[in-house]
Image (cartoon, rainbow, N blue to C red; front, side):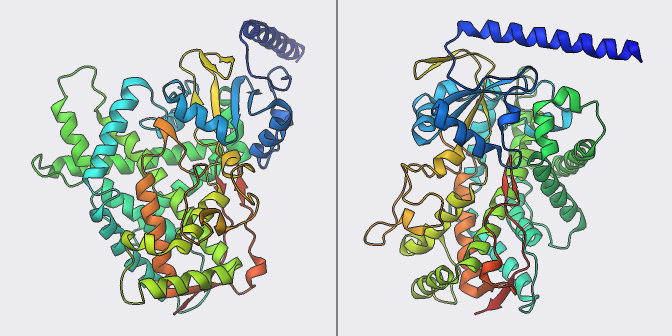
Length: 494
């Protein structure tokens, strides 16, 4: 036992010396200001556990809009407010395109976030360019994709009809609906709402997002080298990510067996054709692993964030029935009851469009954005940000920036309406981030939010048995993602 304690003490002293060496070594840089970190744990004790991004806002009042924190060992520069975030991601876009390599993470988590998520350099450029081009070829942001979403909205309405005005939890129904749109793009098919394998995969997606937004997920993110050797729920999550990989690999194999290079059906077909074209190039980025992880990226991003935003939108409309009624009046006057909503209607529905934008702003689905990473030393606002520094562009601070929004902490559709009640844009509306790392599926998500929500409000009035005052718009989880609370809602046919 004495030997054990001696080893622990010696290890602690060594780690403390290494920490002091790191702190001394970084003094040669003119880093942005920040609170003094503690050895090993950095500034973690100063962060609010249930919503750490709120602590970043508070600290920025003392240290300014560009500040240095240590999340455990990791040196992190946090950008707070629209001006700082825009200057970095847009004005100095080339300096801030990096993502962290995460070399010590679990292979499952690393694989999950690879591809478009955390790749850099030529791999990222090739995969992003290919993904954007291919998704556009299959209709993202255009008429073909609109028709898929309209068709899926009919399946959604049909399923809601079966509840006959009785309360139901819309969480997984909306996940199935939204996921089926990305499944059409990626797999070339939609799944039945009763498909057991499909439901199982969606449950895994939900569980992974909850894990990344949980204290355990944040602990793993900060101390991966420690958590890898400790028992816990995170190992179960990693095994489930492997199940997702197996599901996608099975779909890829099915595509290989039926591939017609002259007539690609979806994203996987196009990627397989590119693999064949570049099979003799040793440095190609088009191979099986990159296909699997890119499909995983698209499947994850194309399911949870959009379905959660729609679910949150329904909660908002239940809480504010006067807003719901005003939207319905606008829809009735422009589209009526018989026609399926289309993107062409959006310019004639300014109040509806403003409410949808305000739902996104107020929910603030990914408050930290996906962190960036310096691939070399960067000069920014007179500071030097050293290579291998994590950069957090705090989207929460942009969407709640008091200089940009009249009432940032209140739900207020007037943020997106001018004095004549016409829709107006706001440059600080950045729920999809900005710059070269902005979300590749932004146009798809915008189309889904508009068509699904308008279609639902065209056909149903939403309420809950406990009344509007029972709805709490504060998210259930507020870490990696702001996950809305779940409610049993009632959809009354109109």
